[in-house]
Image 1 (spheres, one colour):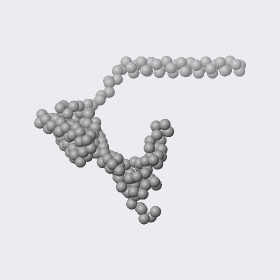
Image 2: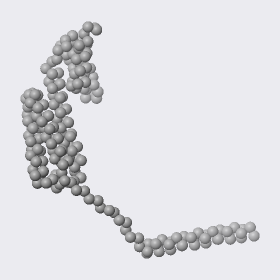
Image 3: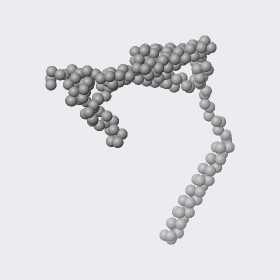
Image 4: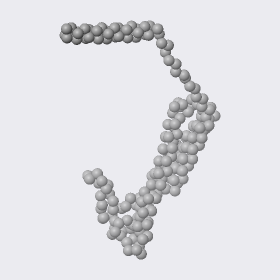
Length: 201
């Protein structure tokens, strides 16, 4: 029906923008793949051919809001992990931060941890507005921690590697071995040549 394009457009926006899966697609552990169950394609859903309604059910609205918060919290935690992995070669932050810088670092770290806890708390009671606010605010704290670490006075030093001094004894041993091998080769070559001459005479 070309007059009812709003349903597939809404369904495509939900899938691409908010990560909401179609209501008639289910993951089957038995088959280890996605299966189709059209019992869930009836009613208030823009997915599937068995519904003519373009409204969203509570489950679809809820999953769209949850996926936004999941994405934001995942981005915050991934950014924090990448940041600490890039600085782990310098040791603990207390080793290269000044006393005031380390104090700021601890303050930001505690505030960031508190904001993530608040985001999880509001997320658990379906208060998605406050959960999104605290997760975005926690990402702001991660950026502040990153700037504290990047402005630290980190001193790097290089240690030059020097070759071990070569002893004359090793040269002497290798020289004697080489002479022994050459003399043995020459002796075997003469023995083969003289043996061949004796056969033909």
